[in-house]
Image (tube, rainbow, N blue to C red; front, side, top):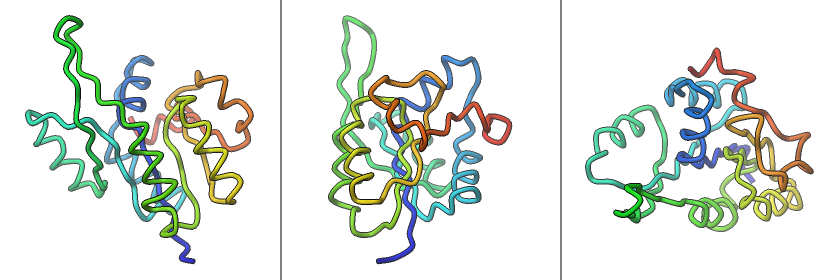
Length: 158
């Protein structure tokens, strides 16, 4: 087993929750923080794919993110785009990448990841659960000893 630490990042959850707090996350600084604080070797960014965002994806790759795309669904009546990446993140963390890393960091405040976090704990593979805010799903409360809210290190990633 290698001593690799992988981060699995729910980009929409992270981005929207930070915006709701009234500030903007610098994704380059965020990756620098993950690498320096937790020695993350690979950071997977799960994101909905929109052709008009190719420049953004190129920039994120240049920072060092491995991007995993999810096709998006456009809801014309609601004028919104939905690129729910939960299944992709779970699949990569629990199966595709599972034997390539020693410890995982999950970045999300979404209770849908409860089963993944439970699995990572059972396998002694959970390092941290980084939540975009101090408001996270009640399903994640039992993992509080692993939780680090982004606002605690806002000054390093804004």
